[in-house]
Length: 191
Image (cartoon, rainbow, N blue to C red):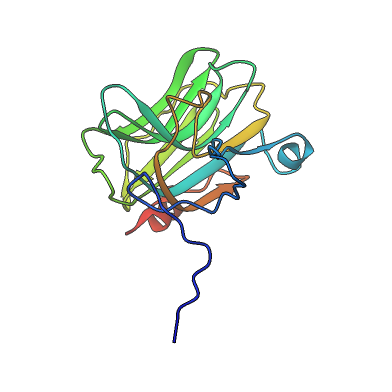
């Protein structure tokens, strides 16, 4: 007659997190920063074209804050990146910055719903940017440069650890070394 209990966990937040071993003192969790860089990145990245896909949600949507699901970026220059993210209430299936200029911004305005999973994809190549959200194609962009200096992939955050964390969940991310055709973007993002 009895019960053995091991690993009891009490959370201050509204959802459980992974186990953090402690020993007679409080320990604070560091940021979960999933980053691919160095030869792990350069072995698969194609600098001339590609496609990003993410199925994710966010639990926060305030002001002009960006919530990044996945990005390819230049860590030395915040003006060079390719990302799937939200911006305030807008879902950005593809946001491309090259040298500080917007090469492409394929968005669905006022479409972010807190805790709702979305499937979005963006494909990119010089002067050829396309995107899809929930099986619907977005109006593409036929002019714009590809960013240079891209040396890493970030998952669940942008270049700022504090402002651009996803604060949500990722079900799936995919990167393709080629620019997928529109029909495949639609198929990938169908709910």
